[in-house]
Image (cartoon, rainbow, N blue to C red; front, side, top):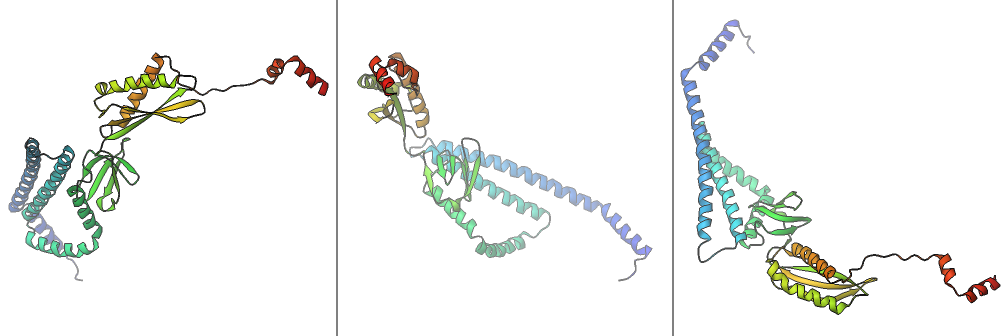
Length: 308
């Protein structure tokens, strides 16, 4: 390696300074910066306009004679917005690279070869995308549905081609690769059933209790619009240790059975209190041995004394 002389160092510094103060360099740098800023601004505007256009299309589509369900429309809307974002971001990235003087054609060709090689090892990614497509195509579940996937249970927040997001009622967000979704329980497709058990004391008149409860149940559809039909009084369900259990079932709109069950319990409790019908509560009876002895007849006590 040749020794560096002071003249060589001075020449290198001078060349560097000349490049830094070169007007063409700063003009090119400023021009490219403005172009990149303009591309990012156009990208932002394109996303806003594209999403607005998609929502307007769905808004107009909802007024057509042939309609999709609200669940399916929400799912397709979210999916199209995601696809739009991917396409716009890809075009924006390619344009920025072209502005910086990078050969896009060679990059795309190289990416195609690399993508082909990666594709053999990215089987899970391909499986996720294919599974996501069939989830949407077959309408297995949609955005807004209440589902159970594995140990996670909650509302579907988003369905993409690769992942599905579920938010539980306590706030946790579960993200599942679509390829890992093998079994789904959807609670939002069909009507739900509310089951309410009411306990009546053995001392009460069961027939009278059933009569007043039946009259209440017939009036509930006018009070709660989530009820599909008047609740049905099935009758005595079990004979407990200290109570008679009467069962009530009610068909509700999907996922409204918890609310309706709470309201029926409240209304039945107020009704039974109004009619003086007792709902049993746990009791404990205690016997004192001294009191028991005092209650024995005198002859019995004398016999015990003689035996002793």
